[in-house]
Image 1 (cartoon, rainbow, N blue to C red):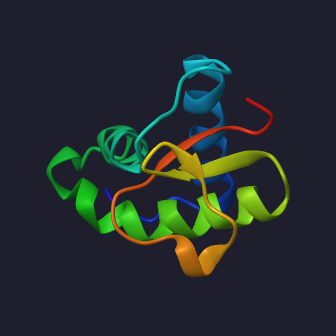
Image 2 (cartoon, rainbow, N blue to C red):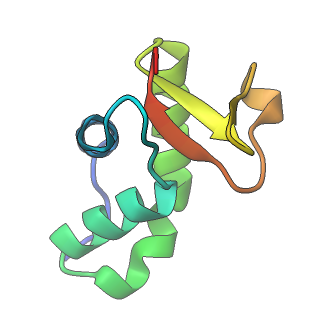
Length: 92
């Protein structure tokens, strides 16, 4: 099966996991990529989805739906998003 979830599916999975984590929790983009890859029947190829997951996270953060965290703190903009990040529902 092709590993090409559309942007809406990626955003929906980010929001689903972030909402499940609650306002005090956060999620890893890796977990989102793994869930999408598993659903597509290509669990071993989850790393290929990290780029689309990060891109969707940036769009959701820009829309105010989630926050991108680095070292436990919200980042101010895309220029600060590098290395290990986590995601949480906005307003947490």
